[in-house]
Image (cartoon, rainbow, N blue to C red; front, top):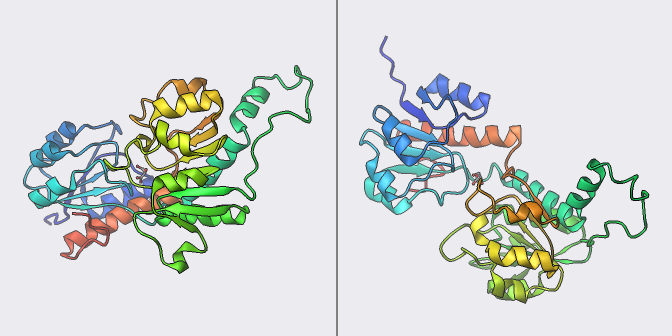
Length: 325
Ligand code: DGY
């Protein structure tokens, strides 16, 4: 019997349930070593596939999109972010592109709060002290040990009030924080939920005792948090980033952390990751994680299923719900 399944290049190992569904519905070529394929690696393996299921670790600039064989008709990325794909080049080439919004909103909002609390309550220093077996040596509990910054009653500035920013705001409100935000456009009152709108990032920075970054990485947002931006923030502010690393200028943030001008940072994303600026390893008021914002079984399955839903729609001749190009 002829095999009429569409052919799919599965460019990473995704969670097992996702792999099983892909194998059921597609004729798959799998990156069985889970290697970090470059664009050239993908091109070399795409000669006989109709579509590619990729992650954000592989970059698709114009030259890679143009280099894809003509048989490749769709690129589905297992990520909400799509700055790794040149959408204009995809449109020009007639390549359909989709992403996976919505399904990771709650998981990333959870990690935002984890980072906010870990940074403000000095969790890294406390954890390193106790796991270094130093608690007994320093005489145990003291009234002045690891004094952090309370969140209740403080202003949390949200830079980028999309789905994830709003979900983080809802959690922070429950902790007694007051929400201010900057977004490209002001939200309707039902979405604002009483949050105070600032029409420039600079105006937001001035009031943000805590700042949480949720905007996209674009040429406009690159290094938005730089020396000038940090200088606007209240003394001892706390910065959280679960969006993209390049929104922060590390050469501005790290000295500000060292001097205490910024009391602490909670970071899940880094410029040039996974090659993290090594100064963060020595900066004890930086609580850092390796980009695990969406890393729950439920969320990663949902991301994979969403990517496959988009591919399925395309091969049924329908519009993928998350079509970007
Ligand atoms: C996303 O979905 O964009 C996450 O950051 C993983 O790349």
